[in-house]
Figure 1 (tube, one colour):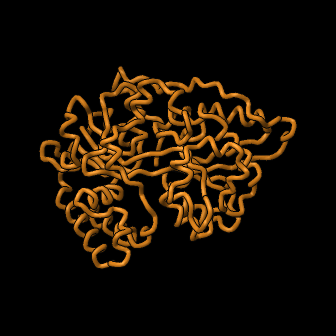
Figure 2 (cartoon, rainbow, N blue to C red):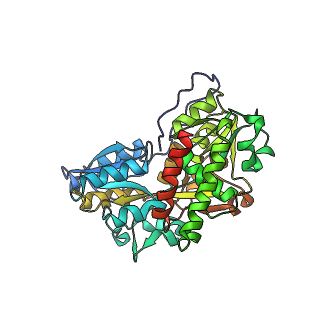
Figure 3 (spheres, rainbow, N blue to C red):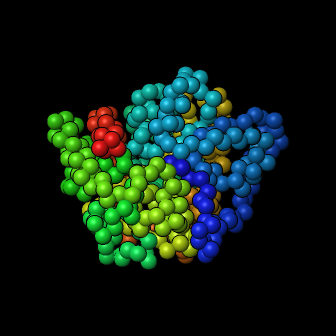
Length: 370
């Protein structure tokens, strides 16, 4: 996912993102004990490691933090696989539903949560969920949660219209919509009453293939309605700002940023439901600085204020206990959903990923080529 800063020049009222005001308490590490102790190399998305935290950590520990920005799970996997078995990175950022791909390729080391004295600061809803433990091990520290949502310009689209994914395929908004085509395949399967995770069809590959073909043909039939298939969060933000689109499928993080910047946009989980995901920080297998990686992770988990800062800077929902108390009313509103909306939210699952994407990836190319 691309979380680069957006260009707001087309909208005078669009303010800059609220700067993180939290002053991080000094971590329990003493700088002299870690002086000249090396570095930690991290691949992560833009703003996932707050700059104020990074500076404080380096000051307290003497460990230099090197961050390489990533914008796509697949690209990160390919890069890590190319470096195996001797990666240059210590910590990577993996979405929970992609764990199996990384684990099966022996790219991640099991997470030893006993080395993290601050592990208990995370909400057990995330740390103890069924997706978080594979082969008897935990594989990452969950830091942010997100969802695939329907975003809409409140000056152009009514809240009632946005209650259903139907509006994305309405002639009324022809050439005023946008979506990430691969993600939209899962949404369309759910919209049509199927399991978009495809776990239900593991023992029936013929049915799985038929469902993917049905979703593919549906999107081909509706292709003239969509303005653009896009790739990253910054791109959909800019399309909303430029009023190129009135509504679209998106991740909640980039849209929450627009809400907090004062743009007339809102988001919902439509009545047909949608999918959620969790970003985790993971230790790379054979990480060159694994001790420093655990020191970094433990410091990052030290307080709910850090979790709130991560939410403030990314727009995604914090996994830290009590993080919401450090957010403004608008920030809390932009990172929350109603109970009715949440009832329709399912988490992405990985069990059927190999079968699913062997069908979905070719279908996506066929939609683009149609």
